Amino acid sequence: MKKILDLLSEEMGKAFEAAGYDSTLGRVTLSNRPDLCEYQCNGAMAGAKTYHKAPIAIANEVAVQLADSRVFKEAVAVAPGFLNLKLRESCLLELVQEMASSPKYGLEMPGHPKKIMIDYGGANVAKPLHVGHLRPAIIGESIKRICRYAGNECIGDVHLGDWGTPIGLVIMELQDRKPDLVYFDEDYQGEYPKEPPFTEAEFAEIYPYASARSKEDPAFRARALEATLKFQSGVPGYRALWKHIVDVSKVDLKRNYDSLHVEFDLWKGESDVNDLIPEMVAYMKEGGYAYISEGALVVDVKEETDTKEVPPCMILKSDGAALYNTTDLATIMERMRLYAPDEIIYITDKRQDLYFEQVFRCARKTKLVGPDTVLKFLGHGTMNGRDGKPFKTRDGGVMSLESLVGETKEEMYRKIREGREMPEEEARAVAQTVALSALKYGDLSNQTSKDYVFDIDRFTSFEGDTGPYILYTIVRIKSILNKYKERLGEADRNNLCGLSFKEASSESEKALEMVLVQWGTMIESAARELAPYRVCAYVYDLANAFNRFYHETKILGEEDQEKREGLIALLVLVRDVMETSVDLLGFAAPEKM
Picture 1: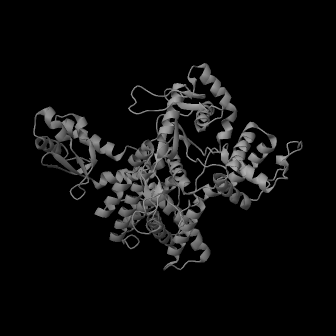
Picture 2: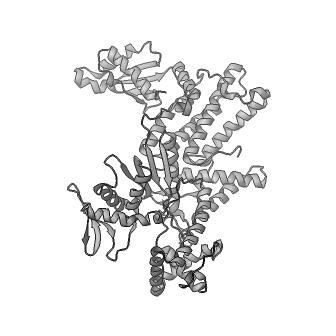
């Protein structure tokens, strides 16, 4: 299905050509003055210099060619040379019908789909998720869904931090609390227990305590670093404890991610490439890419065009230890071998821009990726409190992600119970669904790189540009459709998609259809730009257009049966497109609110 602006531009291009001008001047855009027209074309202004003619004269000649257009019912030349355009309802009807009968509502699939890997988790084993983990999780999940819907193969990887000092801190704290565990007996020869030596509750408390202790006790931190080296080196008892820590952490992480409807295809971590590092280091040395600088192994990544200093990319520290750079480069090496992606996208805090610039340059210079492989860093802004600073708890600490989600659910539950008769269990379930929309929409409606203020009152409001408003609109449509179904016989209840559309008979109905047919253009832009906010803007416009239409139109009360069926067909399409939109954002609508 052709995108609406392409179809209109094609029709306008023919009119320019028929009037004796270049057809490329016929590019049509949405009107920036919707009070005057629906679409506009500024081609006459662009062509005036080429054709040595007043733009209004060109515009008038083109308008004459559109007098009998099957697409435009009105084309008016306006000084100094604009063409103000209005669409024929019959043309719009054809587009809506084609949209309703086509897979993915007429979205064109790419001729050459891409394989895209998205690295968007970044959680660390042993450490609880906090509010800083919210943005990469929900942004990455939405981008994965959008790019997949647009026809690409997408692989989401959580890429856990499971090979660092937090593990050593937990091990040392365990040793101090339970020194008799077999894991610390260097002479132990048997099999290690299959069950972890701590409960989930104990585990949740151990890391924060050990982390705080390490900041005040240098000796304890030194022991933790030694323990880190031991499990990394493969000391059996320490490696067995490491596995317990990773397994228990994954259970907690999956529970938290599941609560956000975030699903990873791969649960890989830094440890997965540990055995690949020696091979990668040898390759970089033998290829002449890496050299020793002040005892460390580095790769020079500066370029002649640099306007600021870009330090070398360190591969190994002077003591031979690996760094984040090392594991990230080895991970790129592994991803190219196992998956051969066309693109690898990293989603994390925008303050890591220089770090990823170094890693990407190093990967290219050392030929870990081919010249056509796209390495992309999508840096996100921070979620701030009302004071404009990074979001904190009331006592100034970093809030856990679980607490943030819980607080939002409670606020949503309170608002749902206000003025609504709903059983407790149902109210809780609805609050959970709507709270997720409040969190995700509140975040995703902003451009990824921008900071934003977390305002729970605004995000959970049923009015304005919010997730609950979008869901309330979908539920309103579902309610109308359910009432309509109640009037039908059993055989007709599941055949609402078979109803015939009718030409729009009011301005609000036409406006609703005009938003609908922007779907394909919006999805292509959102996928190309990795921009969930475009989906938010579209579904908000669609909700507003529907609510205006709803308040101005008798739907169930329409006496003409054919017209009523046409309105119901339109509602089915609006519901389906809105539900698809919110699914791409990572949440869903309840049946009632």
